[in-house]
Length: 297
Length: 287
Image 1: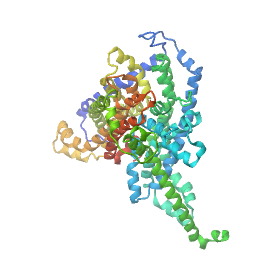
Image 2: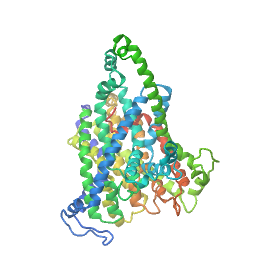
Image 3: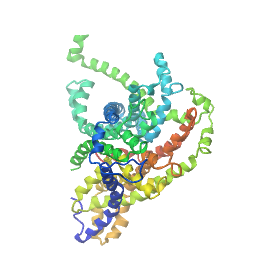
Image 4: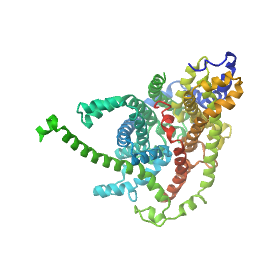
């Protein structure tokens, strides 16, 4: 629909405008993307040889499915994704419902909601690790006051709680952001649907279940997909909060790929693992992009 | 009471109870939200100004000090060079990515050409490639080019995620501008270059600045690439956090001081683009 007003001999202008960005993307994205695919079919122990070794077909991929540590990382990633997505969405929606009506305190709070999201994820991990410190962590102190038996508990030393707090660290950044998205959406909902519910004598909870939630469902779908994509590639906070531990309890796929490539220098295997991560990401990204483009039109 | 509630004429009383109940829920919810959102930031900020002995207690009252900032900016720590690295890498990434992204975005928004939709979907999709896929092959490429542990290497890799994001974001801005002004300028005899320079560019400028701020924040917070590619010379602030270790473990009060240096500029920047934050991350999915 746009561009009708442009003359035909201007075609070279569009090519000229596109060329630099496309060259940069070809060099920094397309090249490594294809290069990693080739690497994934080769054997290459970087610690032993500076040059790539033989082509080994699908051996790296076969090895992945027999590798208990990789299977573990898949399970960890799935668990982590479910917990962090669910908590982010529920808490985000809760904050949105609390703050969406205009008032002074709500306006001030809304301005601060972007801070957790803008904070460096690596720093988030360290910050929560400090707050969870068994001796001088503020969260330990607060929980110990409410429930004394939990005082001095080593939260990150226990698989279940390490996973829980890793998810909470991520939820802390995302829930306020998701809340902002929902607040924007709540403002655009048709008021007559709420008026009708009121006339029918619907309670607050009924109104929420039967009016608000269905009206928000397109945004809920979009945000769930987006949050899932970001959870699946979680890395930074894993390094700085738990280091994948205790044991391998919080070792996500992304972290295991990183370890295989840059701790064990097994480049071929790491590339194959990375491609399995790509497949997982693209499955979700496909639905996200499709929904996005449908809304554009 | 039960019959009273079911009777229609007592509905206002029921709503009254409803309202008081939800009032309490609202106040508790607000309190919980405030604690949840602010605690990690406030606690980090307080710890940054504590002496070691106060940092290892949870007291709210302490004598403030700038000791931790002095400590991280003097040997053996070197947050001075790290800050310079972070600033230079982020600034260079923005300086390269934003102009080329703005040009591409303008072409996507204002021109029709063959393969446009396929190209657009590709630009959108590359953002979903996990960064670890990008860094694996580049690690050996940079090793061969002797670019490991250089700021140049970081800028090159940052372009991989900043460029597509900026193209998509600026395109959104241009799409929302009516084309009539540009059409009128063409009718009035503006040539192509004059049109871009004097009409289109000033119109798009707010969008360009917003995405530049976004790009800066993304590069500043980047962690994986810097962790893999830098050792000593080109280490950035986020990776520098990893170095604040002593025999007794992480030196938390210094980590907090470093954390403050990382987050304060980002908080200031994020406030300037507050209105566009939502559209930015969702790639315009939510308007």
